[in-house]
Length: 152
Image (cartoon, rainbow, N blue to C red):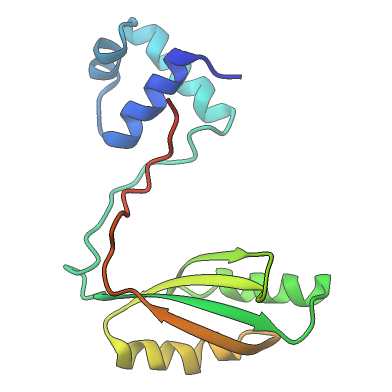
């Protein structure tokens, strides 16, 4: 279990992953040593899984976000594993989730434009093991995409 101080640490880190341990300690009211120990424990226990920069996809030429419903021909452990392994190797796939409902997976991707998505669909997605049907949802507007988890 984590306490309120741990949750405050996690919330601050989500907002500013580049904050120094000294600055973090000041913000949460602990010594730098105690804060450092908590950071090590939160990392060791898997609450903190890594650090990274958030990039602007538009500046990188990735203007179009697309969600794709994917249906497989069979729902067997072997097909699920083969599909998952192949998706993990596809750099265009930002997220992939097995879901309950009328289809098997929800895939999130970002590409330059609709022509690039068409190439991704034909060259990558439809060639994945077991894929029989897809439904595409192009994002018109990102309303919220900060990705911060509610830890308070």
